[in-house]
Amino acid sequence: MTASAQLAAEDDPGPVLRIGRWQLPAGRAATAQARRTVHGALRRWGLGPAAGDLTDHMTAVVQEFLARTATRAREPIHLRLELRASARLLLGEIYNAIPTPLESAHRALDRGPGRGIVALTYGRRPARDGRWYIHSFTWWQPEAAPADQ
Image (cartoon, rainbow, N blue to C red; front, side):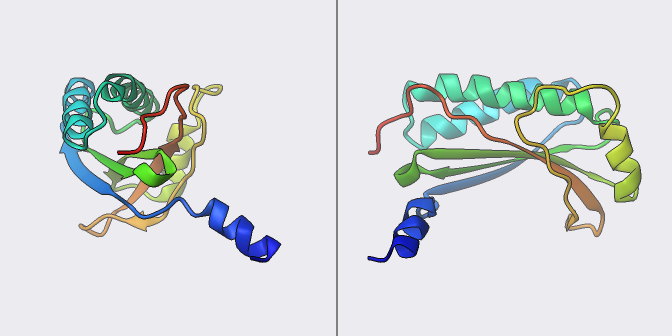
């Protein structure tokens, strides 16, 4: 195997084992609903005791997202989880569709100093109803990742 092929193989996160998508209510109810939704999904996906810690991390991400978005009281929140057990990777994505142009939304999220998100990207991915949404990606790696099953 060549060095570049070996690097590509190491960077490949492996096949997706599970993907879940949910729409959560707007406002304060989103955090509690996110906690229940994430915990239930991770338990169903066989993560056992690790589901609790990962649920806590994902709930914190939802709370951070709600604190950053100006549209939190009006628009539903979309939650997407992707589990790649072979790579020991859980990706969480939270977003809300916004009717405003991307530039206005960017300014709304950029108020104040850093808010503790590990990685924040602004997207131009369209929602199904034709609006664009901002997406915030946060990655975390707990100290004790669940063993592959």
